[in-house]
Image 1 (cartoon, rainbow, N blue to C red):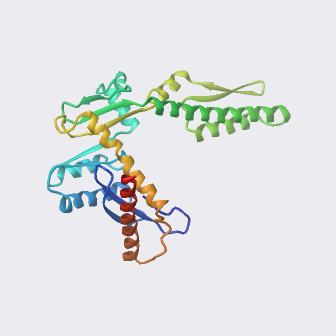
Image 2 (cartoon, helix red, strand yellow):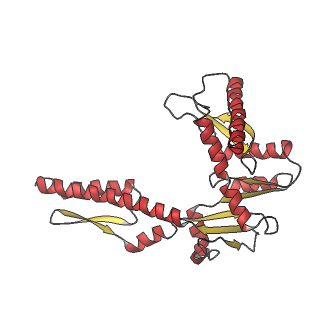
Length: 282
């Protein structure tokens, strides 16, 4: 969690480790140029050395637990497992390879196991999220259409204006909104028209609301429902971060020495314990 992004300000990254109910177990402060994936190894060592004593499953989002982090878990002494999510390009690759099928993405959970390595994939399509994504994409289309209308009006009012320059402005907007695979612009008699590639549009929208979780836990150790619930419980960690940053004012940090910065963050985590206890009681 980068705490400060303002120009000229120093940054720190906080690694917060929580249990399955969202209670913070420990907090660690890293330098501001530390990537999220680089903080993973220290958390694994911490769990093994300080909170070990049995099977441990680490849950992280697709930006935290990737291939190198999974390899680290497999090479670490002890019984470590993971639950994470895969990216849309990875989903596309599995669809092309035939390991996943589009019909499995439904409002109800589905599960696929890779027979070669035993990795399980838990799939779902969230209708509400699909609607939100489609609406967001439509907002982008309307923004492009406004640029087209503005350029057409300008061309009509300024006979010396070049059509090529107007087309380039529309193209820049399309590229800015990352819709160049679906849209292009044509012109006829100094009038611009937005053209949509229907096949590309359908391909772009087919995974709206779809997500896929990945775990090495066996079915006997955790059902697909439990895997799904544990991943969704990451919202508890996100709530902890939001509360620490806003309600508890972990930033700005007014101290400068490293030890005092760590002490400041530790006190904020203790304060969050009180906030969570009160929320639990209420």
